Length: 95
Image (cartoon, rainbow, N blue to C red):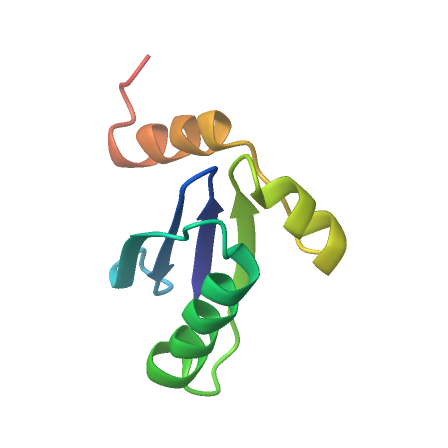
């Protein structure tokens, strides 16, 4: 499984994909500058309700995500690059 966590200046987004890239969970909400609290609640929900003891890779993106990724020692990907990778996977002929 894969977890993508995008932490922007005003919102936090999350998507969980299975090994076949099917969406198992997605969320989009404002964090109202309570980034740590929102992130903790969101990841706890994902852990308990979606992952359920299975292993998953977590990658972080977003303007506030870089600091979180460094502090928590998590992989960071720049969101424009992540979008390019997704577009190529979903629509290979995309330029």
